[in-house]
Length: 118
Image 1 (tube, rainbow, N blue to C red):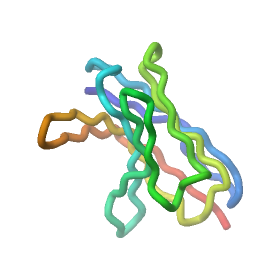
Image 2 (image 1 turned 90 degrees about the vertical axis):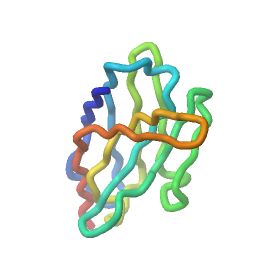
Image 3 (image 1 turned 180 degrees about the vertical axis):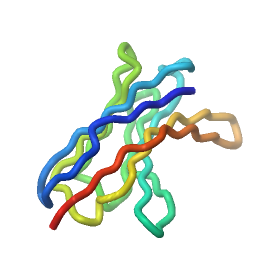
Image 4 (image 1 turned 135 degrees about the vertical axis):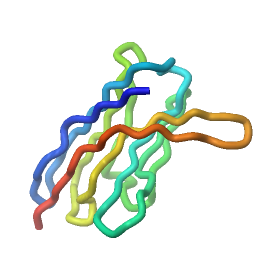
């Protein structure tokens, strides 16, 4: 499994960024995918998840501001982030989810830094 993120950077509060993730090395269209993030001294948290059916879920703090999407033909996922807040600053990780009947295994990319200035 290879996951390569891009699109992070520095943005002012209220601004937007679009993260992209190129996936390879696995059968992309049968894997749920997600974006996790980790801020300094905090635990890694799930930000958004998209199922193979395109059903999406979001952590409460980003609902209405972030949108996750996937393109199975290009084997890419995206995270459109609008109305960014300083508390959104973190390293964002593209994640492939290997789903079994009673557990899941996550594969992470190297991450991309998002910095939000107030």
